[in-house]
Length: 472
Image (cartoon, rainbow, N blue to C red; front, side):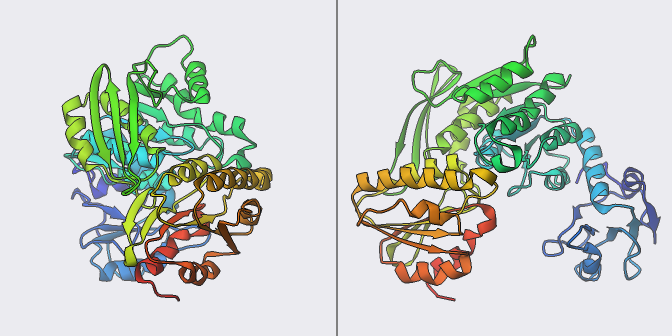
């Protein structure tokens, strides 16, 4: 943590009551709410919610060497502790104060798809001493945890901003003050909760609205390929000017960052991208599956340029780009198989984009496509699964090779019902536990296995079994 953060300051920020010597001027080395990763000397913050109580882990935290505890109520033992009325709000308060102490650039990224991958990419391009949201730490709790990772030598902070409802991105912005922002796209994720794409538009636009009202705003990376993103920008910044770097995947575009060409290697499933950056050429190979990552790369380059990263540094750092966990990872499996892991999440736009890329993988190898149902679509659930099924059917007929498609979750029955080609073998299972032995029983040597589904389907649980070949 920042060395300015002392136990005494934490006490004041949380409006807490110190016990057993918590209230000192010593710096707090780190705050951790997970005993599994807790290191000796760190402060354990016992989060409490409707379905969990961190106080139950205080004893474990002290055994692991916690120097102190922040908790609701009195924890067991004589460890120094800070008694607070609400542990979550205390963590948020600490993060807000730490954000105020940090004077480097703060990048905020949201979008219906691609925000995690763009976050990972721009963090790499910004270089060492950059803190970025781990995994998908993109809600109020996750962003607070991210800010607690700041160190004295941190130069850049990259925040992923997610939402499930109106006002969530606005609250993240008010709390943690991004100065540079990007909306990767405005698609169909969470459309069931927000009443369609218009609702998603309003929710995502909250980032631009905040930047338009902030005196500390420094710039926007603007996706000129997405009409709704352009509309959000125009509406938010009416009558205002802000430093803007545009980006596009259309080779004929006049955007500041323009993707001129992208090549997909059918053997490795990696991407080679040629980009024009403010008139200068840039080319690199990205070890990530999916042509949709071309747009994420363009976004990350635009954000890096807004942070004054030179083209030479972008070129050299691009060699270190890696996919976010479960978002386009390409993994070698036993018996010559290859796993394309997109299991973290799914929505109609992202799924269709990934499947379109999959059709370009080595046509001499059999595809085993595992599709988890897409959730949070509400009244659009059946319609969207049917739409994907019809499009996939067209692509598979055109591919003209044997394919296995395994649907996981009730909604996928609507999708696989449209895969009627004799070259396509289909199965449906209600959950990942039932799907596991079915999938392993279908595998052949040299298969390409593709996983994508909504987070709640938990397709990532298939991966250890695919790696070991053992049926549970």
